[in-house]
Amino acid sequence: MFPEYRELITKLKGSDAHFPRLFDKHNDMDQLIKNMESRVVQATAVEIETLKKEKLQLKDRIYAHLRSAEGAQA
Image (cartoon, rainbow, N blue to C red):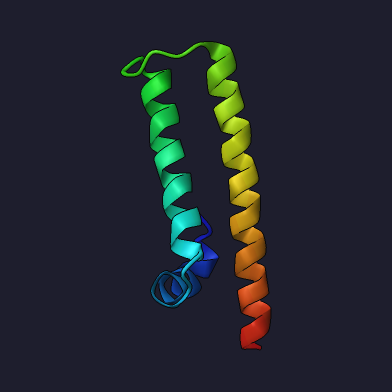
């Protein structure tokens, strides 16, 4: 996710208390969705779609955080 921000992500993981929680939550949601789609975890199609929407909103928050941090560095 966001390979163009790889260095900034690494920096924020070590210096920003909020960012690692967002990043880890996104990764956890991604894995849960994969498990649901492969039927390792039982879920309805509606539950999967709802989780995908939540994950997308979280990704938007992460991107906004990265853009903000990038602007603060400039």
